[in-house]
Length: 200
Length: 295
Image (cartoon, rainbow over the protein chains, first blue to last red):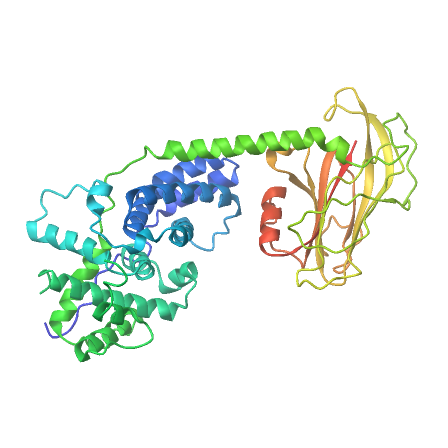
């Protein structure tokens, strides 16, 4: 290959359920906050769970933060200004709750042998080849070697498809810093996979 | 891996203010950064690296979220119900204790007095209940209290200014203009109550906005907007950007809240009291807040 193909990333916004979000906002505006919250939890509960689990690398803490995230969302729903998607807003709340937790508990920086797939009850597709499964599991381990700040931004960018600007607003860093952090993280991850014998 | 274990090449690569020392890492880092910046014309250090990063991006974009699970949602709803239950009981207890807190000026006992109250009566100073967490300055609040209908100010929150500088000119007057007795049904069935005309006037040296919310009996709705004066609003009887004032007749007995904020606000034009108050406070815009009751 003489020229790099553009990296494959989730298309911008493809994880945002526009129709579902409109329904949530409609319910909230109609004063049906509880119904709105239920719909919101159905829409993004699993994504928030997975994000927090990977971020905190502790299942119990992740579940606790998920609960706090949606309680906060309920309290803030009526003031939601629609300057971002509900999904981005939720991730922002989750991020703030996670930072609060980090200040109290350094658990997330231990980077132990936490089994993300076991915690999330991930069922690999039967068609997944052994090598791909090994690469995916190795990637989960490699994510654990990043600092929390870097891991959070990388996940928001590469897994959630957020823009650098959105991430910068969430983590209160200039978007240029976010770009540098993500590019360094990608370098680290590639090297980590290679060390595990799963690079090219 | 602990922070100590992370020392070495990894720690170096996470340092954001310097490029990696290793030339190959440096070239890769520069290319990755260019890619993040959208500079797609920057060539990768090698085709192999480009391919590896393409695959890495694919893996990161398809991280599994795991088995769908809704079992936790009931716990969130239960927590919310408990919190709202506590809030409701606190509100109920505040309401039940309100009469002892509200100042009822002498001679204002509920009497079937249909005599119109004097117009723009110099009023007694209303009680001020300071809240420790809110910045404020001494502001004279006048409220009409000379008639049977005009009950007192229950809560007052006020502040110097959003910038923190005191404004001697800041003043909110709630003045009873007239009162008419009628037999009410919405507030206390069969009880005589009085609908009153009020003039609510804010004096402030800069552009400001006034909103009036009906708090009771609309408590379940968190307070509904019933009048607004934003300088050019049709509901303003005396429109002035720097001196918003409106004349307001409550449509039913109950508690009302006047909130003045700095500037002509684009904040939540149809918001309830609760939502508007939260947003205005978050934006550090509230100048003064005052409750009053129409009986």
